[in-house]
Image (cartoon, rainbow, N blue to C red):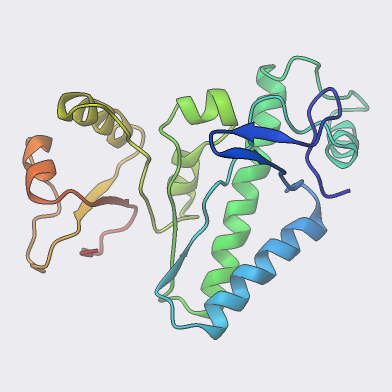
Length: 212
């Protein structure tokens, strides 16, 4: 019951490194299971925060489990999910569900301590949305994450800088760098200076300067 499924009903997914299963995050019992694990770590261990990774679908052809289909019918006047996994309405519905869950996770962690950070390492947008229904800019705007570290993997510095610039343009980010000096400037122009001086960066949503 907890396994996510494709249109054909398959529950196994493949990716570089092997095959795996995905849980149906639309189910309240699955959500509570994941949230309880996160809360256990936040409450019982000396951590500075939680990075909840893979908050997405494993592929676009996913979400066709019985529970998600039933929930979609309830909200769409009895109409089932389209056979086309790229249908805009179907994609929007799935993304909205993920967005709500990320907000719940943020609230759960902050209920333990407001000092704990909630982060994510999303795939670059809009590729993340088109292929995995992951809409991380919405999390930042909603305040559901304290910072994100987009997975900007590129072959050279020019491609890296261009892609990072696109990600910065998605929402109004501030830039933080992993450096030892507390006085490190929060923004760097041009971006190439940031890459040279501080290879670890994070995009924050608030006005508090942090050095990671």
